[in-house]
Structures are given as structure tokens and as C-alpha cells.
Length: 121
Image (cartoon, rainbow, N blue to C red; front, side, top):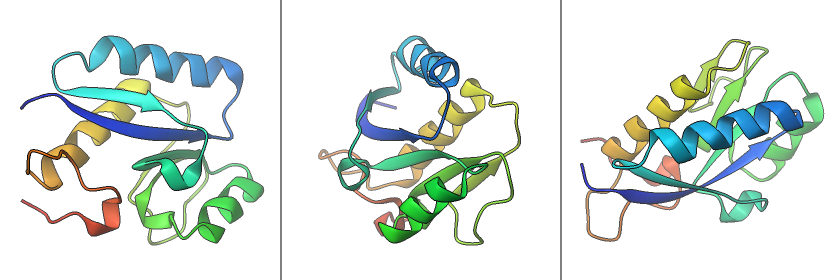
């Protein structure tokens, strides 16, 4: 698989959890994926959100991005892209992002801008 760039918003995590995720993204995805953190939910291809904070879930829902989100922690909304229990496993999150890229638009332009718009392979 050729390297794809995706923009990922990390919402609601502690500084430690965020740093751990970003390190794994940088080190673990060298060939398959270039993961770039973004702060803007609307600019993100995928969101990784802490489901233990209702305000974060409301923010994602308000942006209409539930089905573009990997939730970590409490049980997520039914439409979520994926859900993982705590403690957060950055390797598992990275594997899910790689899986998303594989299922997304295989054109030269890279993955589609929203997970809900991707066509399964």
C-alpha cells in the first residue's frame, strides 16, 4: 500500500495520551500512512475521540461526524466508525486508520475526505 496522508483530530485526551498516540502515528505508519494531527474537526478526515467526556461526544455529534469517529472509552453512539475500550492502545488506533485507508477511495487523490463517503473495497 502506498503512503497516504490523512488528517486526524484527537479530542478529549490527556496530554500524555495525545503524545503517546502521536508518537505511534509518527513511528508506526512510516510506509503505509502519514497521519497529521489537526485541531479543526471539520478539517479532519477521521476523528479519534475520548468517549468518556459527554461534551466531546456532543461536539462530534454537533459537527455531524459520529460515523467518521473512532471512540475510546465508554460505549459510543451506534453510528460510530469504531470503538475501543480503555486503556487506549495507540497501535490499535493506528491499525484502524490503516484499515480505513484501505477501504477508502483508491484513487491517486488518496482517501476520501469523510469516512461516511468512502466506498468499501
